[in-house]
Length: 94
Image (cartoon, rainbow, N blue to C red):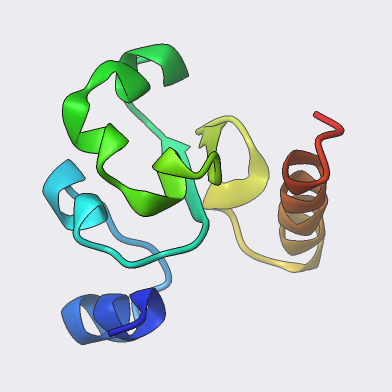
């Protein structure tokens, strides 16, 4: 089952959800974007062996954003900033 279908089955139409590492590890996603609201750094997160088993992480397609970014907001400006963030990270400009 693709990642989108897996998440819709689990969370319905929620626009945001907190996911455990075990849930993330079970996703069949090509790319993984997260808002890291914990105190752990990216390196700390990636040091956890469960992260290494996530296909998107293993393939270098893991993108994390801190909770000071616009990812926790809605509206035209926030959505535009999220698109900018994704493009910067995926194209290697950040």
